[in-house]
Amino acid sequence: MKKIIDFGLRMKAAGEFRRSERGVMDIGAILLMGIGMVFLAVGFIIFPIVTTATDALLAYEFTTNATITDASFTGFTAVVGITPLLILIGFISAAVFAMFLGVRIAKGGGGTKLDLGSLLLLGVSMIFIAIGLIILPVALDGIATVIHGGGTGVNPLYIGLSPILLVTPLLILISFVSAAVISGFFGIKRVGGT
Figure (tube, rainbow, N blue to C red):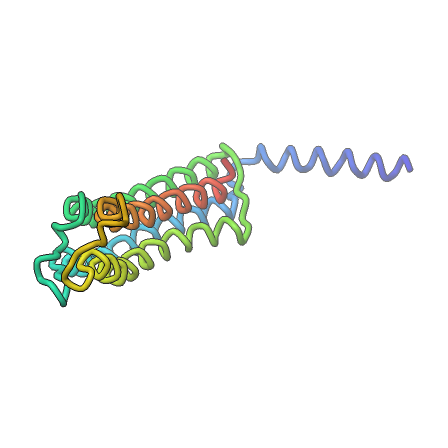
């Protein structure tokens, strides 16, 4: 039993020596800096796709009634107009934050928690943006169909439905962008071990 305890104490001392040793590099720090570069690259790759998708949203017209456009929906045009900038700043911020955590870990300021969940959170953040931009035109058509109501508008018996329908596209867009930001932030935070 004494040999096992002595061996355990020697291993603990060796681990403390290794942590204080200069030149030792945590592979997680390198991976985190690599994730930062990926975010930067993906941000600039996805940016033209996002601007094309938002151009289509800003030019939206309901096929049955051309008077229902993107401007018909409460606050939608302004938020769609700023979405490409928000997404680009989000990817650049994620890249800078990941690089910062990687450098901090490399200097000995913590460790990484490399697990599948944190990497999935990072991937899901990018998927939320794509799904949001794919689902919005479909949602706009569905909402415009109800607002048009076959030419008669929303049935007056549905009290309060029209204002909620008019703000729904804005809520959908904000929810997908927010979900992307939140999942990306927690993904980086979990990988960084903070």
